[in-house]
Amino acid sequence: MMESLDGATDLKSVRKRVLLQSLGGECSCQGVDCWHEGSCRVDDIRCLQLDHIDGHGAEDRRRLGLRNVVDYYSQHVDEAKRKLQLLCANCNWVKRMANHETASVGRGYCSAHVDKTIVERLKERPEFVEVQDSLNALLAENGVSGDPHLVCWLRDRGLYRNHRVTLAFSLAKAWAGQSYYDDSSDSLSRFLQERLISIEVAGRGIGAVKGR
Image 1 (cartoon, helix red, strand yellow):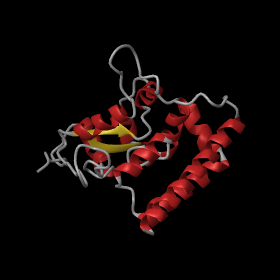
Image 2 (cartoon, one colour):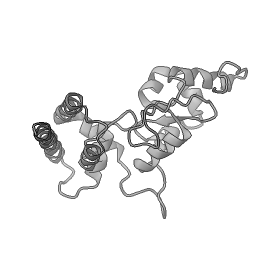
Image 3 (cartoon, rainbow, N blue to C red):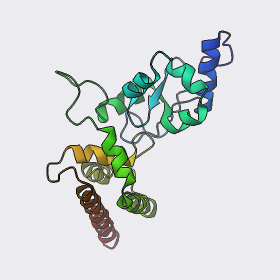
C-alpha cells in the first residue's frame, strides 16, 4: 500500500499530492528495457519521482529559477502532463543511465548528451512525421515492440521510443553519434530519409521471417 496522499496538511504537501494525482499517482514505466517485466505501478509516494520525459530537468530548473518544480507544475498541470511523468526511483535511474541524463563515470556529462535544439529541429522536419508514422505502423502491425533483437536494432538507428523515451530524443541521440553530415537542414532531411529506409528494411525482414 502506498503512503496516503490524502493526509497532507501543509501547502507544499497538498500541491505535491495534486501534482502526483494529476500524473496518475503511480510509476508509469511499462517494463520495456527496464529492470522488471510488465507495468511497474509502484504507488508508494516515498518511491515516486517526477521525471522530465525528454531529460531536460536541469534546464527546466534553471528556467524556473527560485521556484520549486512541484510548486510550479502543481499550478500548471496541463504543462506538467506534457513534460513530466511519474517513475519510481529504480525506473527513473534506469532511464537516466540509458539516456545519459546523468554525469558519467569520469568528468562531466557523457559525450552522447543530447542537444535540445537538435530535438526541436528534427521535430520540425516534414520527414519526421513520416518516420514516426512508419515506425508506429511497423510496431503495431507486427507486434514486435517487445522483441529484444528488434529493439536493439531500432535503438542503434535512433528508431526507438516508449513512454520514457520520445522518438525525437532517440533520433537526436543517434544524430549526435554520427559524423557523416553537417549541421544543415538538408543533412537532417537525409538523415531522416535514411531512417525511413531502415524501417522499410526491418519490415521486409520481419515479413520474410513470418513467411517461412
